[in-house]
Image (cartoon, helix red, strand yellow):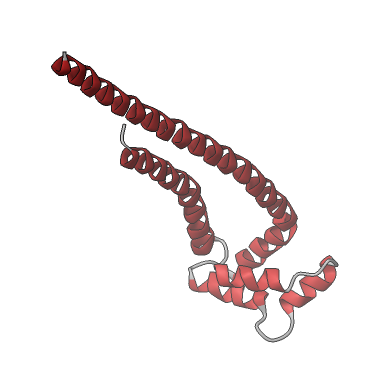
Length: 156
């Protein structure tokens, strides 16, 4: 196995890892953006977060760039009702801490998984490149030994 094939396998594995991670996250974000809340409004809601839930709710419903009203207009434009939008907002407000915990746990699991994958992939590259190096040294030694034997035979 040549060094180029080894590195191609390594980078191919990294590509698979990236796809396994990026594809579900991208699909989830697309579905959230299209059916629950636009991502820019979600970012605004998170940026206005406060440790006090009543203050956070006030930050979302008052002031310039009213996130609650913007979400209700977006939902109405998508064919929903204002009451349905308010129901979704209540659910989002209640489940946000749970979603945040799931995201944090998911990131920890992902970091452990990808770290383990990278460690194994790097160890595999080291093992294979060492094998290629040892095989190359053996081949050179064998050829040198064959030349020495031929040279001795010719000298006799």
